Length: 485
Image 1 (cartoon, rainbow, N blue to C red):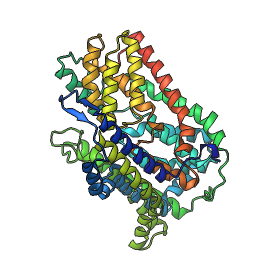
Image 2: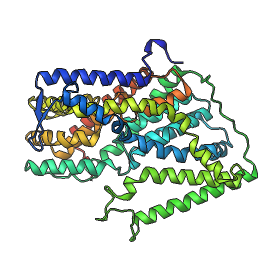
Image 3: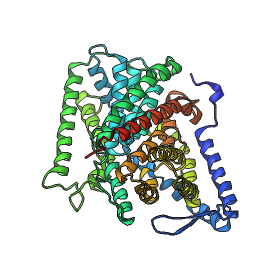
Image 4: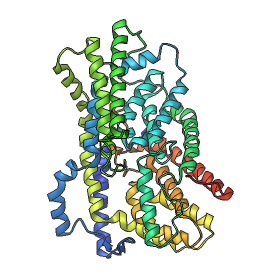
């Protein structure tokens, strides 16, 4: 049960109050003329008041488009279509029941969810949308609290956003900014390709998995206790012969679909690659969430018709509309969150605070290792108000790559330190783009869940991961091990 002393306003109210805070702060800093210079272009960035005549006009003109243009909104709706059909048709339930023919060790399920979360950054932000509701069901199926599944998956996806054993969508984008900053400052870039931190991030994956597992087992699940809500797991009823045939058919179609997508991406035909033949900003990467949702929905539909659950197209449409009941709460929270994010961006508060802090840190003179540790902590702090990894690194790289190069620190080492701070505090910031969705998932199982509830359980993950990951970095730096390829 959620402890009442952590009780905060409803998530929608919280984002409304944050919006008011941003408006007032923008007015105050505009009065004092707060401004900074963009390190890449030299352009002056000044705080814009949302209480000025122009600010008020902007807000009234953009209330609707702030909401409809909210980045996660369309992604969430599209992804939930596929999940809705898979759940409504009974496909997800059948997969769980099929895997439960022998008694499952619940701690193996925890490990599975953790690694799925850590590896999910291969496909961008899909883990936030698709994995979390599935993790809740998986935890529930082995007798663990479903909110524990949501939090474990959320922490694995967010705090482990830079750790992976595979190349993620983030790697080439950060490397491109690092290379550009090094070239612009006439710094020897050295090894700044997409895999320049690969060795370090592989080891980091297993370190983070160990930390998340230990905290989940020793702190999170005991604190949550036994789930006593209204949503019940249907149990491990043996699959009938018809259901087994339906599941085999659905999985077969899923395999064919996956093969077709991989062929269209990696073969010589390569219609899903970008025009230059790469994967960055390719149709495959840009449309990965739709491809996943369509594949999941396709398997759910095949299972539904083969098992007899679906008989007409109307049954499929009913499955597509199933998640909309959950998303009703999400839409309300997302509306206020969208206004807050848009106001924050319009005011330039995030950029001004981050660039001022970066300039202050770059003026400090310490030993190279100590300055790197401070840089990690500074990045973790900035990440609380500016969560986009690429947006932060776009300007921070042009400040810190040249400064650290003067201390003999290579650009790939700077980028590696940045990625630690950028990931560790993702789980505790209210400015996370997917925070409205996380809170909506939690409220499905506990109506009293708020940001305070989430923070109560996630702060320990962020703190321990930041400390342990920084220690690993120090060890790597001292021993001189190569960071990557």
